[in-house]
Length: 273
Length: 250
Image (cartoon, each protein chain N blue to C red):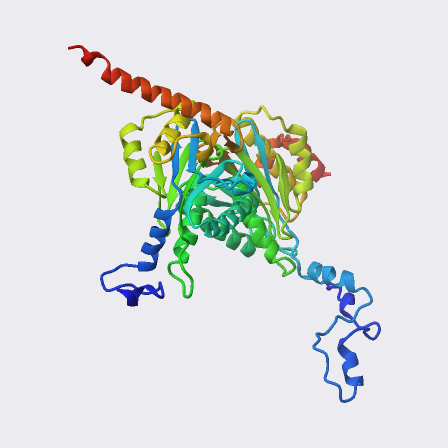
């Protein structure tokens, strides 16, 4: 895929501080920096970030229900059309009662979740009580906000159980932070939302909710090329998180859509003729 | 010894920080303050030296709130108190912003004590000349707390404590008479303790109460305080009479 660099090409001379300084003979130049040579200066930064931003090729989801929070994700990592790994851990264990999901740059997500884990532990030690899910997600959001525009790619959900009950927050690299009951993040999220939203009920049991989560991830991996591998499902309850299942989505396909055996005679007849 | 009290960053040969000790002297000269922690009520009572007639007493409040659920009283240099209180109030809001939760009493006490300690280990500054009594209820758990800090920057939790003028005698009284209490009993205990060293009467005492159910600090009206003081006097008189009564027969 050829990158579109038209936004960086010179179309007309720049109007501004920088290049006029040589025309002011004998005058000391005003401190300045190079402005991008473009007609659309406001859109320039956005275009530049879009160019380098890796697409968030993944499917992750999380939802709150009666028994706590259900968190699920696929495990495929892709670089363009190349599947670089089928076994990536996209659900990160921040501490025994909080989980984070990974979408976007793998290194960014892993590093910042680990960093958040450190901050949460320090908070516990200083204050002799666990940090709340809203507090932890706010720490992460503020940290990502301070790196805004520098090319971080993080689309994560922080799920946990604290004093006020189950908590779920969506945090991204723009520094945005949303509280909610149901989220899905990644290129496969539209497909996952379809299955999740139509099957969701607050009063589900843990088994029903985990089946819904697994099915949503499966359907997203079926249609989205950037999602696949293993569908992992975690449950966060009052005692902390627990991994419920990790099923290969290829096998899940045949579990949902079993192949009916065709009688062999038909095939042989066609081949003979 | 005179050589070691100019810059507080210096220890004396026998391990004293004289500026901190002098700050404690300033506290001992300040007005008496009492704090009592009950099961569902926390009370702060402070001695009010006679208000000049022309002064607007509302501007000279000695018990202030740091947030909806935390209150503070202090003994010592009032100007230093203003600085510490403003910083603490900002910290309470900053905590609400970054952690989306109100502070616990222990957290804000630790912050204030930390500030007081910083000024005992910096160049060119003197310690804050005040000890504080901090009361409040923790968010969610709603457990009551009473903490005290002093100019050295140490802090600890108490069931009841006093600071300022004659604090030793008040503390002795509290040790003898403290028992687990709630509601009006807690308020009475605090006022009784303060009356040990302060002239009796509503205009010499400032009392503020915080309960688990209500939000905010409630400053008691002078009339209310007078009523409680009268109750206490009556109880005292009855106790005296009971002591003197029976053996009078010869």
